[in-house]
Length: 217
Image (tube, rainbow, N blue to C red; front, side):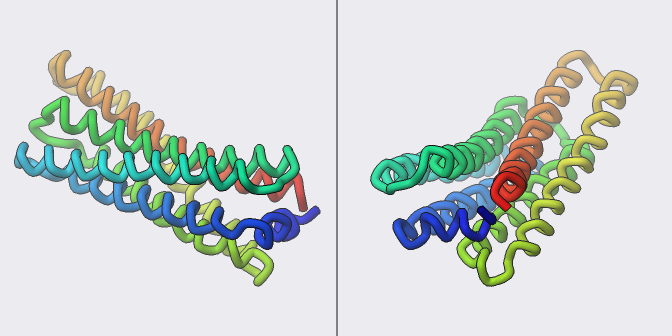
């Protein structure tokens, strides 16, 4: 069975999956942009307001996932297809959760300044979120020749994640070789780790989409 056939199998029965994927991707993209703004914000009141906005999208994401469960439970799919469709939704929710984790670290650690490397990692999260949104928009039109577009977007996320891996490794070395206090080392290590975890979450989504293609094509 091709990936086109996979999506065609459940589209006639239930078209509500696609809008939910897109809606969740939009929540992710908006939260990622807010996170990027948090890393350059110096006003503590504004920082707190941005974090609350991120949380709003994370909460909205939980509601989308719950709606997804409701739709999935009322749709006739084979167990194999159900597992893949469900796992993709879970992975997207996890990506959004990791963005919220990043925002929480930025807010609670009260950084005096943010290293450019960390800002670049936040940029990467934002770019990965944009690619993911475009993937979800194209999923419905898989049979119209969008498979190559999806593969390209998945590869973009892989490149982004690799770039963040490189930044992460160099930054860990930097914080232990520069003249940072112990408190600053811990704070920066906390943030770079959660940023790395977040880009990994994006790559897991793209890997999942690739694996569906490999199994079913």
